[in-house]
Length: 101
Image (cartoon, rainbow, N blue to C red):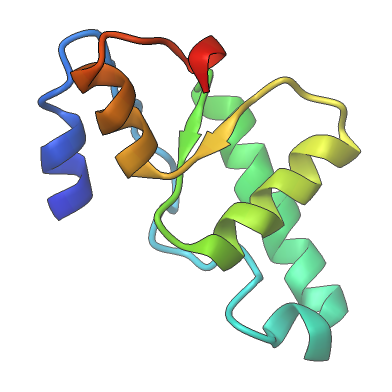
């Protein structure tokens, strides 16, 4: 809840609910290494929800999740940036856009 509360303070940002946002993306530390098939299923499921949401950007606070989601986005050749919530706050404070990262 805390990251969402912070992000909701960014004037130009419209947050879009993500179906099953509480469900793991499949990275889970070394899970994607030890349980590759299940990790891939979870990652694809997460990406499907991202696509269905219509989100133009994904904010993720966990480095493992960020890498997992980015890999699935790259596989499908989608143009959906994955950033840390602090990056969005920084851009907002400095009146910049994603192109300025």
